[in-house]
Length: 119
Image (tube, rainbow, N blue to C red; front, side, top):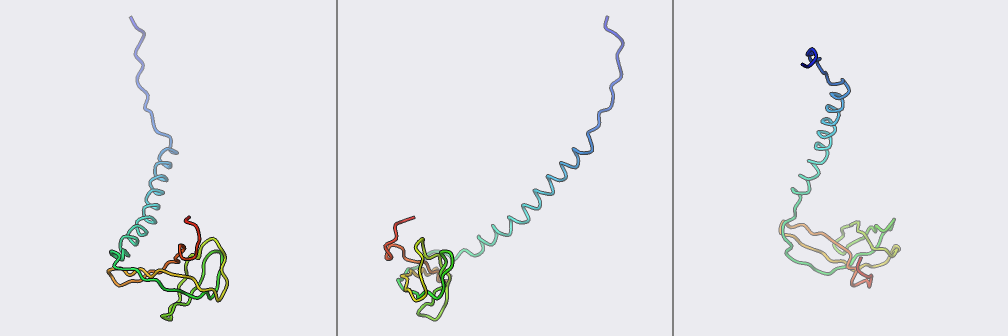
């Protein structure tokens, strides 16, 4: 026959395990609190479908690290990515104005008209 049966001892989880679990849950909640508003803002600001595009131009006012501040014919100023080649104040860049169904107009530099290879 087998030897005497020993009573089972109670096994408790180390206190650090509860801390890790709580810490991981808190990190997940914090990440969700940061990511959720960003996702909602991208969904909310959807301009709708593209209704049309027109060609226009803008004059460079200032340039820093591939971003140019442009004066438009309408009197507006916009900041746009101006491509890999540096531009200087006074340069005229060809633009495309995209009009969306909610009435917003978004501008972009027309790289094909500038002769810049596709990126």
